Length: 116
Image (tube, rainbow, N blue to C red; front, side, top):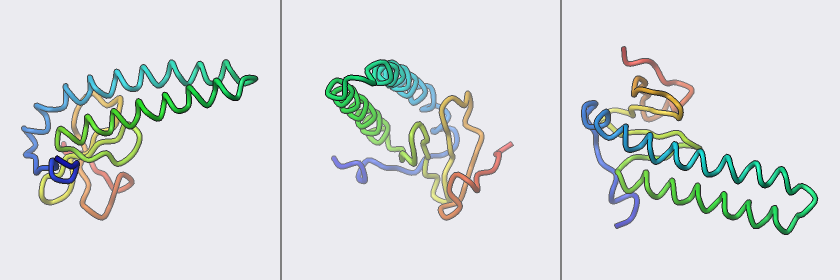
């Protein structure tokens, strides 16, 4: 199944129930890529090793995107996830603790507003 086939329409309650799993997946990816970023910086004199770690970091981010899309969500940026609700998106960004933002289909992240 492609990522576009797995996207779905979420009620707010469905999105809230899925959020802990998304937070866990994202926290693991953030932690892993942060460690690799430190390795890249530490290896500033070794371009070959830096490239190895840069690819590893890109692969981890790609895996994160796939995991999020398999849950039916849309990745809109690094650690930024939208839940399509049929009228726009419930919007979550790491490390937010709750799902409390919404934006229409055309506004994007800059136009997001608080739900409550």
